[in-house]
Amino acid sequence: MIIESQKHLFDIPEDISYLNNAYMSPLMHRVVKAMEAGMSGKIRPWTYTAQDFFTPVERGRELAAQIYGTQGDNIAIVPSASYGLQIAANALPIAAGKSVIVLEDQFPSNIYPWQDKIRRQGGRLMIVPSPKDDDWTQALLTAINSETAIVAIPQTHWASGATIDLARIRTALDEVGGALALDLTQSLGAQPFDMASIRPDFAVSATYKWLMGPYSLGFLYIDPKWHGAEPLEHNWINRAGSEDFAGLTRYRAEFQPGARRFDMGEKSNASQLMGANAAMEQILDWGIDNIAETLRHKTDMVVDGLSQEEITPVAANLRAPHYLGLRFAQGIPEGLMQRLADQNIYISIRGSAMRVTPHLYSTEADISRLIHALNDI
Image (tube, rainbow, N blue to C red):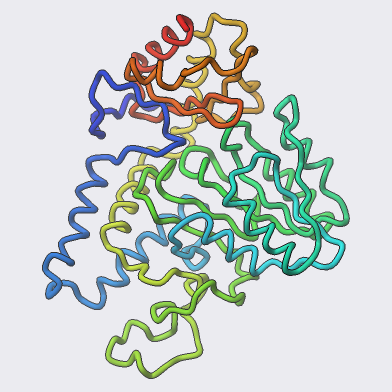
């Protein structure tokens, strides 16, 4: 189902064409109000009870679980994608002679933990070169072999918007006994994710892009078989019995159940969580399949409107619905971002690609404005 424009839910002036959700999503009015409500407890701390440390957290855990397609017990609260990926890197084993597979020009938060793991524990980092045809799925399937211990990848490449068939990657890893660690920051909330067929060992997403929430918060999925792994930090609130503030000095070896042992310290930031929760409630109300279909319609409009042959999009069957990468035959024009910004059109450039990433606040007028500007340039 195509969703009609939702621009009225955001504080975006009519003359602004913001087509840069992959950089950072704007906050909806309801999200801002929720964050303000969350701050009220800090304004009047005598009204903030011990239970308030847990209620927004557990609500966020359940909402994130619905988006992932799992149960709340499998979700940890983290401050960033890099935090979650470090938990994955610490937990997943690698034997001598085995490899961790990553993508060329992958976002650095999903590179550095694996580089450090190889340095400390041995093995090797295998970097899959960028395929000229953007078919990352086939490139990965060719790379996976009996030496593969871990594949650490996104669902959507952050520069080009090319998507990866994660279910096929999971099947290939099953055949060699490999693990799958995912950074879904550029896809979760806007692109369907089939937990049953993908079955990641770890998957993380920050909230400030396609989950439409605030900065410095994320949700980490952890397969139950890894729930006994070592958390990244040992804080008071992820220990059993932490709800009893009067008994905190009765130190406990046991953790909170499920993935809660991996929760970050000071997770009970009501403003952040209540904002993220409001955003996820809206995403679930829209429906991720509907969001994806609507954004596919918008990115297809851009492709259909381009008259310049030197501007080449990622092939339709290989690109994510919400994410359009455009390449220029003669290279990206000098000062392109600023030239567009001078016309109140906002996109981003990563690597050799210009990213066009609309959302439900993007109108047909916004798309037309971009098309005309690119054709003129």
